[in-house]
Length: 359
Image 1: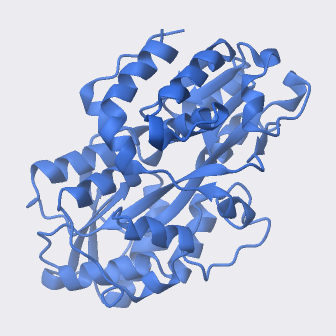
Image 2: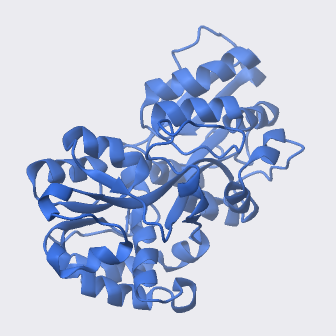
Image 3: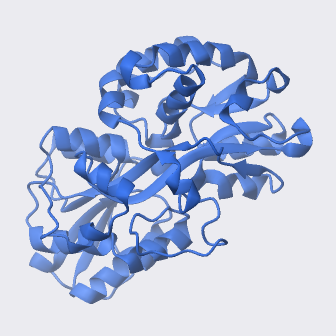
């Protein structure tokens, strides 16, 4: 198996591969509105570089029109933008959307404003799991995803129904799993710990790595980008993979006949969140933006256009609309992960992962 060298910067940026593009953060004005507002009606929003045109159309433009505001976007992957803010809190960012690990760290470091329901009334409409994330100090959730298994039934000759199936001998040399440095990597560690019948919070992943050693003969390659996974399915290099639900459509675009399943035993959830840096000069408008971001109307729009699980409990999706999303029955069995635990142990986990899976 090819060995991947992972530097210390990746330790703080393990959400890189899925929540944004791999380019350095860049700043640009939202061109989708003709507003020429300035001063207190100008807002700098730092967000993921994924599907910018859709984000502008579905999220930014409605807010601009409703508030006579002008939004400037800073786009890029979560890790790069978070590091930039840490290094320069006075950079002028008013709102920042981050992966859950980065927002957890930022709140622990006191980088963000405390937000209350009096400031953001739509906090009252968060789902129970999203409220838990907010109350744990990870920021205001704006989207939820979870992991499942995608597989080529024709190639492996049977259905996959459980996480334990990944360890089956007949799947030798057929699986790809997410690298520890991307969104689903730590979630995979939780799955491995469950396979070992061990609570990961009590042994800090020791049994999980034992389970991964057992799984290794089945793993052809770990992946860091969803596009790489799609290519591996298309070429026939793999027939099974563990994947975050937001990437399923990307894979099916390359391999239309694959099946996606979330085992009945449950799954693990990851949230993207929004925070307001303490040094914002536009606090009131920033709070309005956060409230808009988790409104039912905005949440449904992005659920449909970007395949993101909604965090507002008032959002209703049809069965077809809910396909491949962390919603309904899937959301009910999606368990939270402890990103404080993950952040505290990521340094040693990256080292163990490389010795275990990338050798």
